[in-house]
Image 1: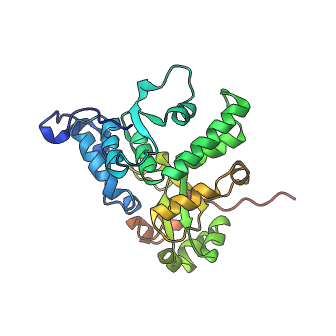
Image 2: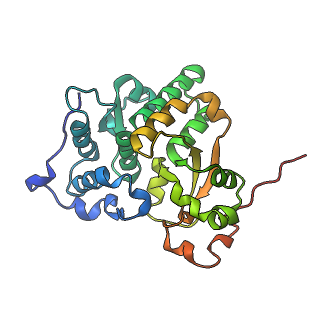
Image 3: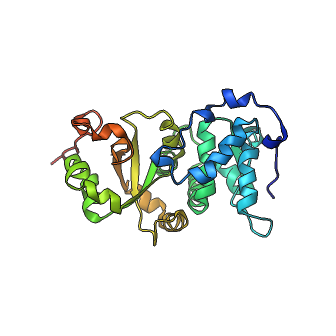
Length: 275
């Protein structure tokens, strides 16, 4: 059961957090935040008004999953995680997500709210890996791939020509000859660390792009398709293309400038295969 925690920000509670919270730095007009704005901005306002992040997120859980429906997760303070217990195992066993204050866990919470099926699938795969290998200081390739997806993935529905050029890092085609195909595509940033980094946009920020084939461009359909597609075998193939996200047309005014895509330190060429 999800419970509300902390003060109601509309009750005249503390307002000091309005100035101090890093959540205040989020620019909700950023194009990449369009899928997150409707839900995320009210949560952010509650946090800025002084409510703890787990409580602010749980208010949305209560609204989206009423008592007649089982919520995918409840957000709890970080100290609810027992010492020595793996974070992913705790979520799997309790359906509670330990949540710290700050941008990183704020965006993790938003991803749970929008992509509950995918987040649950990632959690299941993590726990299965822990059962096989235990909790080791260094993660193996499978858990590395899972973490990479969770932290830094972007989901893309795109025509074949654009996807193939992106995989090959043919930047002149991706952002030049094929630029118009971006209007026919749907790109959603999924990784919560990726979303966190973009609060302070920098040209080198790069996503690991996973190609999706949802029935429509709705988040619900995207979530269902991605969750059903994920497995250790799929992730072991490293099914990602690299995308400097501020190069996406319409996402950053600077990419309209001549020479923006000529920066080889950001728009790197594909490595030649060894013979």
